[in-house]
Image (cartoon, rainbow, N blue to C red; front, side):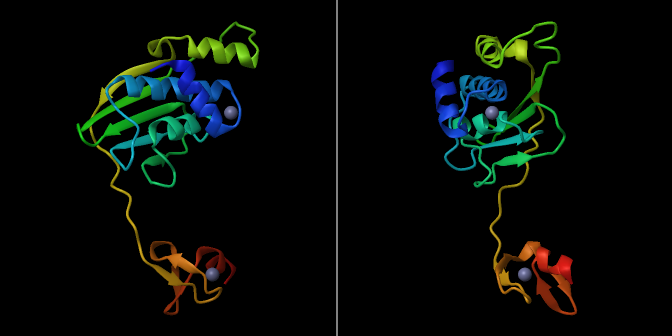
Length: 173
Ligand SMILES: [Zn+2]
Ligand SMILES: [Zn+2]
């Protein structure tokens, strides 16, 4: 997989070129190079530990998306990515290394170039991990909120005195 082609595809989705996106491109490229392919359904599940620019590269290049439910977000503030391949029952974790730009005064664009020309092992610690994927995305029925009437996924309703409310209405009760 050509790194710059992948970067262009990611930029098309994300809107701009930046070091964070480049990190995501390198993570996605590594996974694609490991005989994984773009996830049409939920063949691939990705667990991310941040919600920065890099995650858009994961969505655009690997098909692990917020909407499909095969992108799981943990709000840990770390540039770590765990990839679960359901078909092969394999999991792989990429953990960002510290100090990539330590002691270097580089512009944003210089950082992007440096990242895209790095070896994956320079950017991430690479390791196989236990295959313990999050459960498949479920589809739930909706019910109408007793106050605003808007259809609300049943698992997100709150109950009071036998009536079901959506979260914003419940919080205002
Ligand atoms: Zn960005
Ligand atoms: Zn409501």
